[in-house]
Length: 172
Length: 172
DNA sequence: CACAATTGAGTTGTGCGCAATTGAATGGTG
DNA sequence: CACCATTCAATTGCGCACAACTCAATTGTG
Image (cartoon, rainbow over all chains, first blue to last red; front, side):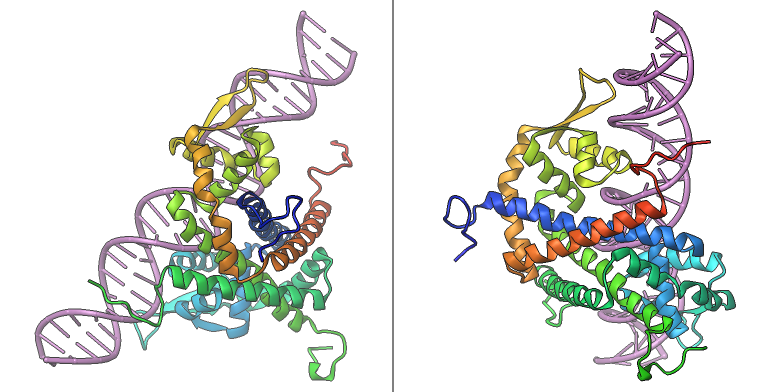
């Protein structure tokens, strides 16, 4: 009961799957980069890159957070966050200091300037939303769809490459 | 007029927009990376990265193409493509030679090995599709949605930063 | 035909994303 | 208490994305 409906009839040939794959993966890739580009233009005024903006969004919600938690919110590891946070610190938006409780942990906290930046950022979402031409409801629907996708993909990736998996496979 | 209590339900306050923005932009970002991660796992067998796979998809359709055309298909510029193509050439999948017609242009052509790789790649889309858990119809719908988004975003970006624009603004 | 403007690849520099590794701090176990 | 595994941040290395620039080839115009 594969696709069919193709000129030839029968089940969808691999060739067509390859073409469809070209479509879907390219579409997602392109959409992501287009989004990035629009954010780039708008965030230039704030002196932020798109990933830096994501970090600031989380910090505006939480104000103080260890790097680990930040990474969980954003699904990013220290390899990405460490240099990014250094740049935010150099820009005077955050301060990093090792936790007294746990010397391994580093607490990230907004500076006055970082808190103040939020005011200027308030207009960003509207400008983004208007760039998409989508209404709040459409955005919400698309978001839900993308989250479904991410959940499914993460689950599949976990199956293929069991790393943070619950079942601890024995190491020979 | 500070925040006010939004439970009341007037027009959406900026604070909520900021939260919504966190949601949608993060969702897209996360979905893109999750997709990338799944492709990474699957393409490892072929010795390709995800962007390299995109290039190969185009070449499997066209067989021979100048770098410029390749860039138009993928919306990538030479800054990205040049080193990528060098790596594909080093891997023995493509050959690059300057065009005799136009010495500026570089023709990219599949090698025997590059053509042969297509056979092994035929299974990739199925594996990706099954990872998403989406059917062909859902994939097609999502793709259409993302393409709408990309078109809108590109148009908005072009307005904000008129570069390849149709209207040739005079240069003083 | 000569000369300026444009085009096409390539290079450089910056930043992100991720795998793999390092090193210090912590926690659990005998 | 000593030892070992785990945890957390940082670093290294590689590849992609994009802006800005260089340089040669080509095209257009006078």
